[in-house]
Length: 456
Picture 1 (cartoon, rainbow, N blue to C red):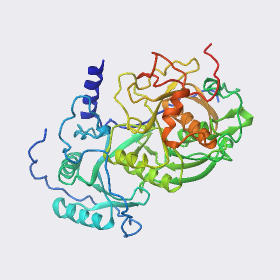
Picture 2: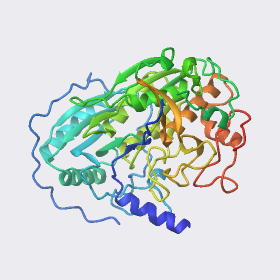
Picture 3: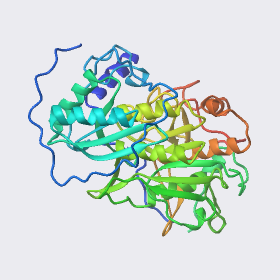
Picture 4: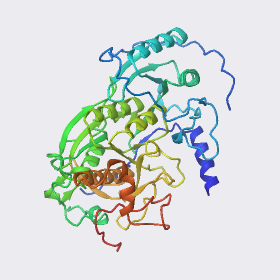
């Protein structure tokens, strides 16, 4: 079995850049060997019409700690993974086979630690490849200077990416990967996780960050939404508020009229709007995600819910690696790709609590991902959620992740644990499901915050 998992994983890394989906299909209802240096790159033309956005300042970031990365800089990007090695564990990222739907066409992101380094790096890229940034961002909390480049096509972007990863291992360079959203209503979720009675102040003003789409001003969130910030790139249109509102409500909502309560009512929500509407669907990009994470860190949140999922990305890995050093709990959806799907990120990165979904009888959601990275289970099949037009029943690991984020906020409000032990503590109290002990389907078991009712 281990061999099959390794084989599937290695295949998945090679073809990893699958469009990242919001981890939640919404169900309407009643209410991703060292080689010789490559030949010189083909001519690169700078796109016309690209707008340059000021970086908000030219001062260097504070340099009181070294710029560390979660991968080994001694190994170039094109060295294959060793058996059993995962990119998230510090190994190199193999160059993936590009698909036109997996990244922003021809776009490359590069970051540096100071304005001086950024200026020198941009000058080198212009001299070598004839490219100029179409956007610059100064991400203060992450201590990054980020430049977004738009090359003439994906092949040239891949070529430049590989050269930079080999020749400048201290830079962060990667594609601008796309991410997409991973009558009287029947409320079963609170019973399944052992909340006997809803409390309006269970979250006790714990600051919680949401990396998602817009959050609508529904009654259930009238007292919970503390701040919202759109982090989309210029020209992008925000996604529908349906998904973000549902996630927010499951964390901290309160609606007596519909007998609805999230896991941690009273928590203070900070919504980073990173999901965009594109081609009839919703997705986001690495650029948007790291900008959203940076803003949330500036809001001093203690929990960040990331109900998105997709292939690995160096910038996303580095952001997660840095946040793990802070007193912030990271929760993410395990994915809705099915039993044979490859691991999704950010859920599969170490230090992130990856959550899968179960139904009212504690059975696994049929389209949930499986894998050793799955940490915990929570209700996420046909759970009723508020919406701008009333409410509906939703299904997906996105919503299970929201319940775990609420559980972390609730625990924080009671100051019952240190932030770096949440996964351990949640698993200590979880109810084992499936095979005895932790397993790739249910993780360590079903989230428990009290005494649950047994399946009927």
